[in-house]
Image (tube, rainbow, N blue to C red):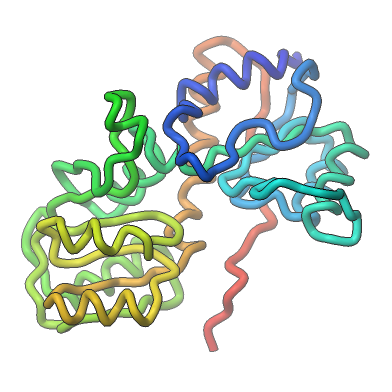
Length: 270
């Protein structure tokens, strides 16, 4: 039996409060009717046109994504662009798209906590305090945690690669470095490199790290492990599905939720 969209929205707000999002972000309802009913949900990283079209064909009422469908203000909706096509498919199929982005990154039990736990980190604390966290409502972006036992960088990188099922990882720094403390940030972590360098961690694990990030870390005698954007965030899908299923079961809500089966890393190692 379908439930009101507003009920789902309140559950999502408890999981990832909008106040925890960065000021530049665009979270929450991206497109759709807030007065609609919801019976079937997909969880995805991106609301690309192929995802939205397939969801509509499958009878999905709501797609919950990590990355916002609408990130910057639109001056027009051109159906020939990926964003315009996705919006067109959503309206045509009468489905809604909601995004949980930096609010899910920051939230307790959110994406950064998930990544840290997947890598076995203990005693996690924030890497960078977000505005909402500074106000006492959340922990902030990124995490710093301790390994159960010290490990050489090269061995840690191989372990990270296995834990995240990544086809490859990139290292910067001395592979022989003994790592005790680890900083992590899901997605694009370049802006958090200064926070990492101010932390006590020996290595920063993230995605989309650049040449100058690597040089800055190398000159500081520290290390990086770049796992790629997709592989640092893909665990969000199944984790959020499990959490929503538990929330719906507790409330006896007959809402079906599953991970979108279509997405893959846009980069292919050769």
